[in-house]
Length: 66
Figure 1 (cartoon, helix red, strand yellow):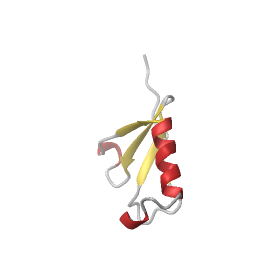
Figure 2 (cartoon, helix red, strand yellow; figure 1 turned 45 degrees about the horizontal axis):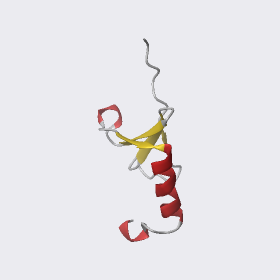
Figure 3 (spheres, helix red, strand yellow; figure 1 turned 60 degrees about the horizontal axis):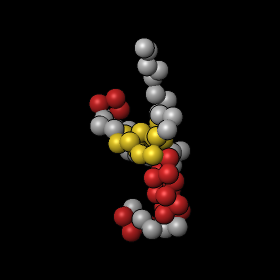
Figure 4 (tube, helix red, strand yellow; figure 1 turned 90 degrees about the horizontal axis):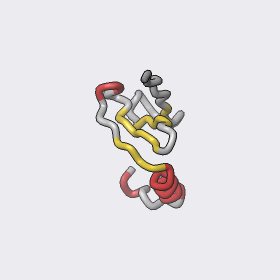
């Protein structure tokens, strides 16, 4: 079985490479630290979990952390 390389994406709002990157795993989404690249640990979330987080971010629920 061959594994395809992940296509990592980060926000166009990222500055100086200090951001997180996301990759599509099919049923889930992987998240990593862009500064560490392939050496970064990966967190994996279901699409439903990520969608809930995005909705919260759009609603300003995490603005105090930025």
